Length: 233
Image 1: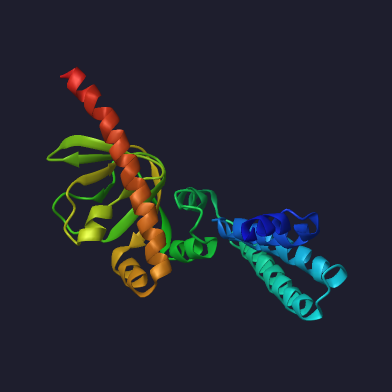
Image 2: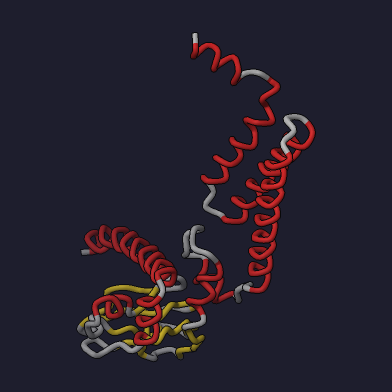
């Protein structure tokens, strides 16, 4: 009987303006994008204000809902401002594109501030097998060939990192990276980058996400290339 009463009250059309904002708040919590989260929360708050101002009148709830909406509007405007201010160049956008949506653009921008855009001419070495690596390299444009003992073992292109294993382990380069054609890249000085990510968990999360994304891509390319090498043998 109690359950039936509950269901009846839940299905009562007069409670629609109570259900909808709570449903919207639940949906907002499922959003990875902070802009959508704020926008849906604002919609929920506005519906609550209308309901409590004109139907189930409660001035106190209206007061707090107005504050709730105002705070979210301000935060949404801040997100919009930073999105416009932090527009990325073509090379920076390639770097930003490998980040999951949960990584804030401001964090990506702070990470990019640690880099320098550089160019490598054809035949230039960015890492040399057995030698210390001073920079973590992100290829924005061009092609790098990776050699071990004078033999080409891999090819890296736009969106790939070079020197990431050295950055993670601190070990010398396990291979030589040579520009197969002119390369444009973002160079992260390892010592400075390591200090930054150790001091900032958001930067560490962003960098880990980008390195993991690149690792998955390299493994996928290696799995495709292996059957072709076997067939050629």
